[in-house]
Image (cartoon, rainbow, N blue to C red; front, side, top):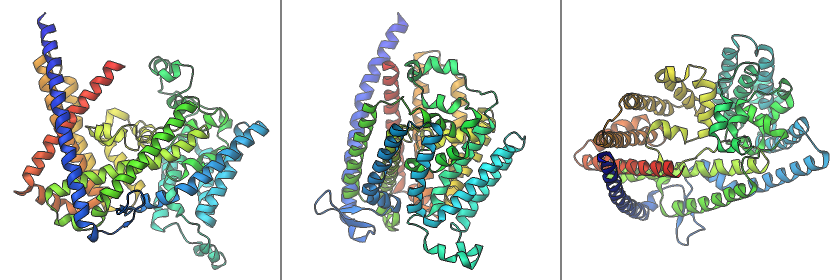
Length: 532
């Protein structure tokens, strides 16, 4: 009876707590949005990267981010290209009853036409490096030192592509120098970072074809609602081995340059791609794909509203933030991370949408909102989630998985930084993230060992978890600000600003706010558990 009474009191307290948390969150966002609007009005004349807007009259639009500006400006032509690509692919399949090899040829031809427009004569570099990887895989796949060969080959070209800026045809002789005038409209070595991931995926999926898998299919089928319904989820498509004849050169090239996913992903394994070439995905219905596209349209309207009203990224691109108060720096930093999240969500979901229409399912890159992650591990599982799955499959598990977790995070994040670009600020971001991972892993291990025996103990552990979540979110903000806004040279400035007399109240307010946010996330997780 006492236990029941304590449980009832706990539930009543949680309901009252939730009301307070929601009211706090509303007040917080009212203050943040109001101050963001005021900053944009006061400083817009000193900011670069603002252009005349179209959504709201008399408001400039923040297009200071080159990646967003290019994607946004090319949405009409990309939609036309992928619409034609999809229509022709469906017509060819219907009229000629094409199977794996036939559809691979169709998609390869359409994708090569697309790449020819993007990269011009530089497509020769892509095909040459890809062919070299294919030959190495076929020769050494069954050898013990195969992983070393494949990783060395791919990292070598990943680095060389960046160091030599995509190479020049003139280095092969002056008779080829004229081809440098036909390099297309998009730098091929930027897109090739994704091709490297696909080449490694092909190599290891082929390497593991005849080996025992760690994947427990029976256990998975018991838990997966998609597989229970008679369909095949992405994980099953990725984990089940394919016959050797699926690893042909045409299917391989088709996978590397598959047009809807070529520029930015999401990333899918070779096994998952080859499994869907013959039998298109059936896990996501036509209705849900249509709703997915509609939600994307609502998201882009939200992005346009934000960039017309709040110039977060333009502040980050300028040096103006150095002259702002700690409170304003926090608002700009928080706004930049929100902008980045929404930008990548729109880019990745646009390409995933077209891939789904063509019958190829990929993992969702942003399955959770940036404001619904209270630990580093959860954040990285839900930010570029397809890349996270790739890292787990091809680096984390081969290196020993959870048994060597503390060592693995250093290898993984160093690779992620190098994969993005050869910049010290990205390495600083990676190593800062690894440092912040250590206390989180220790806290999680202690949490698993500690079993609360009373409702008071559960309450104390919940509060400690919320405090840990607040600290983690703060560390995550610092790491991303260093990596993508202020750079390594800005660390001292950040510390001096927030540890100064004026900055300490702001730092305290940040921690309280993130504590409240973490508690709201706990309530969301508990509500999901009750509904499941």
